Structure formats: C-alpha cells, structure tokens
Length: 343
Image (cartoon, rainbow, N blue to C red; front, side, top):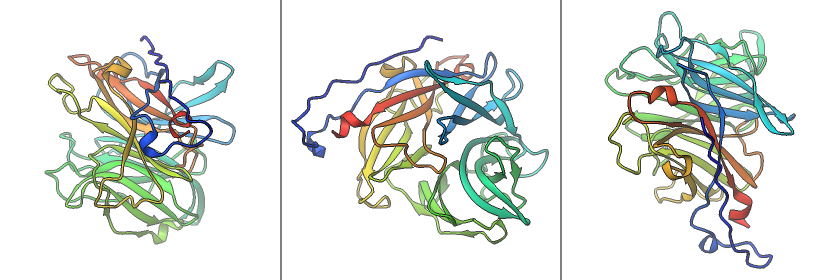
C-alpha cells in the first residue's frame, strides 16, 4: 500500500522568544508513514506503542488470528531501530479470549506499562489492561488486567477480572483503556464509558499489591467523546481522539474519519467544566489519503509519559470504505513537530 509523506508546515519564528498561545499556528500538518500490516485477511487497530531505554518499540495491538475470521486477539509487534528507520518484526499472539466467562468473545484495546506489582507471592514487572466482551453484539464490554515478568510475555490474566466491571448488558460498557503510572503504588486508568459520568473517565487505582487493590472513584473528563489516548510530559497533557467530522455514510459508519491531537498545560485542571483543550493538529482524509482514520494511540515511554516535548508520534489505523473496509486496517504513524509548534 502506498505511503503518504506530508511535509510539516513552515512557521515564522519571532526572534528567540517563545510564542504565546495566540501567536502559534492554528494547527500543524503531520508526516504520515506506513508502519506494518498483519497481512492478507488480517486487521490491525487500537495500538499501544511504548519505547524502552534502548530505543526498541513494542506495539501491542488488536489483530485477528485466523485470516478473514473476525475474532480479536492481542498481538505484539517489535520495532528495531536501524539507520533506515524502524524495522518491525512479524507479530506474535500474546493473549487470547477465554474459553468461557466475561472475555470469551473478543479481547482487544491492550495497554501495557512497566509497573512492579505482587500477585500470589510472585513479583511482576509489567501490567496490561484490555477490553473483554462476552456478547457478539459488542455490548457489555468490561476492562480486565493481565500481568507478566517480561514485556514480551507470557501474560497471565488476573483471577479477579474484570478489573472494572459493567453490569448493563444493553449498553456498550467500559473499555478502550490507557494507563499512566502515577507512582510506585498507583496508576491512572483512562477509559471510554457509557456510565452516567460520561463518555471518557479516569480512575486512580492502587495496585502494587494485587491481593489488596484499591480502586478509586470514577471521574469524568469532559469535552471528550469515546476512544481517546492520553500521554503526559513535564509540561503538558496530550490527548489523541477519534472524531467524526465529515459525512459518515459508507461503511464503516461506526469509526471516525479524523484522529485529532490536542493538549493542555499540566497547570490546568483535566476535570474542568470549561474546555481547556487546544488542538495541535489532526489526521483526516486530506492528510492520510483514506476516508477513515481511527483508534489513535501515542508513542510513550514504558510508563505512559512522552519521550520529549519536541515531537509526538501518533499511531492510528486508516481504512477504506465499502466491502473491503476491515481488511484495509493497517497501522500507520503521524509525526507532529511539537518543537516548531511551541517555539
């Protein structure tokens, strides 16, 4: 499939001074790259990509195991840095739906973080939150937890899943989770929701000891739809979001056409009742060449933080419309030049 390379916009520099928000360009145009595919009859979406201290990238994504069969599994793609850019190794299945129970239909939307925790007398270094569902109509989604001693697995499912349950079988539920490690005891869990609190929420969870988990209250993050992915730096909170901007008439009508990047300074209140989010840029049909651009994630370090404030890499899935929509789900990236935006 053809890659689309789009240059960054040229911005005017005002001497050596940093620009205020009113002086910055309205948006910047990202550079789009094709990353990898599961091959014919396979789909890739909902990426969680982290980079370790050696520059190796680990992409945890949703993919079907059997060609042209629609059942979600979690796969790992390992990206090796080379002089010519990242080379992705073939994907490896690392976790599957259960035979029975709350996650026996699909498991998807993985998010992996480096976080030390104990479980049944053993110590684990990696956690994965994921969406599980037991209805083929894709309702009654819930959030589960898996753990591992190694980033590449094997991952063991928590025996008291779902971590975040949802009772109503007539609504979508909770899922599409992303975590940020707050400290050595606590994570912040962000997720889409159809609870009374709104479409995007956060909970703090104390989980350094899985035999004594403490789950905090659900807090709404306003001015967000579903399917968002946050990351933090020392200065800012960044958020990529799937949005519906243009006419959505052809299938897949259930995914958005634009993946947006926005931010707010960390000095602002993420839970404010005033909209503090500022759009930096987006990927839509004009930028990617595809009518759908959805399920975005952000490249972070192993604990959910930005590598720096100079650039942001959004991973997302574009799609064609029409009967072959699902088999066009490959992984792309969009690189945003934050240095030019904030300078």
